[in-house]
Image 1 (cartoon, rainbow, N blue to C red):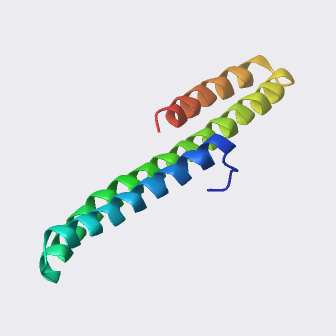
Image 2: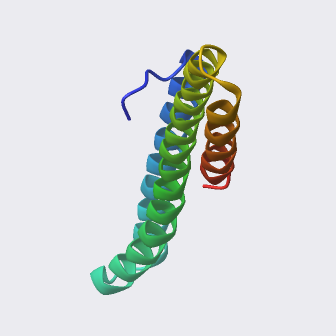
Length: 112
């Protein structure tokens, strides 16, 4: 991610990681307490690791996607403003043509 995370997002990401680690350590402790065989403990720890890893990965994937969308929205607004300036200095027929293309492009970006 190229943008800086705001402080609350950093704290939330840290909490998600810590909660995931606590769940995994708790599962390990419970497995060792409940079962004597290494195969049973490993099976439970592997299953829980799959769940926790999927949830933590999904969380960070959503954060990355949201940051990318915010960046794309900023670029689209900038392009719209720049095109508005260009359209202000061109003739009416060209301005209508460019405005139509911009609306299609901007709608495509918003639907991503």
